Image (cartoon, rainbow, N blue to C red; front, side):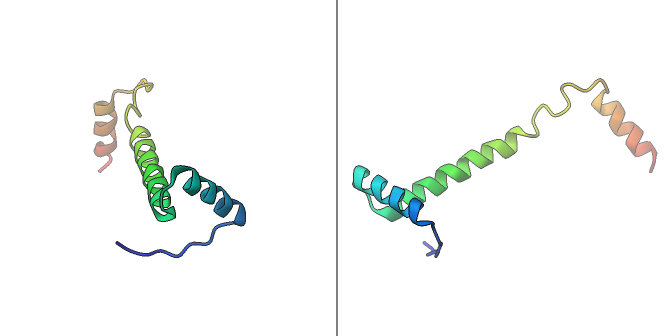
Length: 72
């Protein structure tokens, strides 16, 4: 496990302290869970941006590809 030093505004430190106290968990565990949730959320967003990209286009994807390659 790696150790990372970060700077947080006092307001975030205070909110974090409230979470730690209410959940009765170590601060590092709460931060790890938050980072894990952030990463998982962004992985889904990145994957969803590409699926169905051509669904509303009037051009056939294969024909478009052939046309581009004909320029070579």
